[in-house]
Image (cartoon, rainbow, N blue to C red):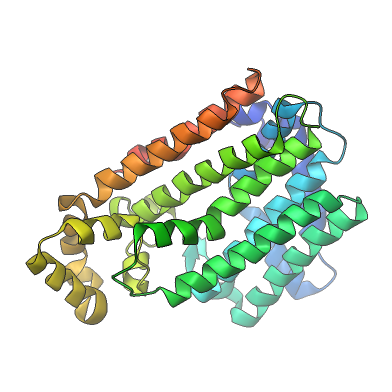
Length: 334
């Protein structure tokens, strides 16, 4: 994303265009280095960035909560750096070779360079917060990075566990995904001065949006195509990650269907030969419908936490952003 792209942002982001422009400028500074290898990698990252969803909700939460101070962009910067670092490390752990339609840092430069780049981005996030004296936000993000690390370890531990419960799954996705959404909204409310509502309301809003976001992301493995989402589908199933669509279908399926999919999951799966069969299993036994229902539930619960906050364009934009999380699932449904 560059400054000209920001002019084309959807309405929810145009409300915080100034902050996003400043964020892009700061990222350009950080994503460069006098170490040639690191500079090449950082420039590569900046060529095709994400949608800046987490800084956007942070900025919107700050404006909705009150009058943010001049340190707001630094908080958004830290959140985006932590998120990017996490993606780089995730690609190593999961052996993912493609993200956003092109090779991952891990695929292009190897595990060593990718690991160190992720570490660099983490360190820069906390260094910028320390330089600005933003110790409350540092504390929030330190807690979150701990949660995300534990969440990734849980995911490793629970691979190929067909007895995984929905409650255990929810605990895992809170740690690995929802916690950063929660922290983004909480940090925004903190920097907005909490004039129109407490930090906890914004934190709970972000947590529930994060739940819905991850459920929909897990659903994409079964309902989207590689080209539409910019990364391979079937990767969760292939890698043994048990997610809500599969948990639901496995819970609902008759014994014969369970035995068959267990065989594919643990022994004989070949994507070309068996993937359509797996998708039919998940769709036939309610995995898709239930996951969409749960995602919608969490979005409505998220909105409920902010209904008592004074209405404003920024608060309403948070509602619109939360609706987008579920709507994108219907856009990708094949």
